[in-house]
Length: 127
Image (cartoon, rainbow, N blue to C red; front, side, top):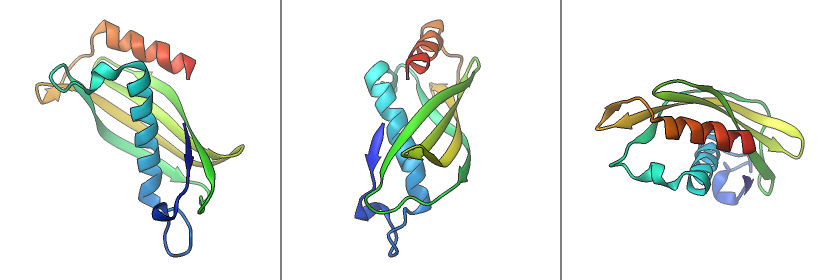
């Protein structure tokens, strides 16, 4: 997913504020779900919550930059997935984060159905 850095994303010096990298990744994950598995947003059927993030800020993005968020499925378990998301400016990696998402149904961690696991495997192999 491509994202342009706007004035609202930056601090007074025109550098992207650190929390906005997490927002860029959230948007990219959401777009992936909207595109490939929109039913995951029906909270009555179960949904994913962010459980843990580990990230590295490698280089600053600045006002006007065109960024690209790339997604990679690192691990899939019964009730969780680990997704690596990296942000690039041209070919230069500027951010990397590992996002652990837990599948929740009826307000508790639950095993994903076989269909959901297969969907993850399929749409991450294509992205």
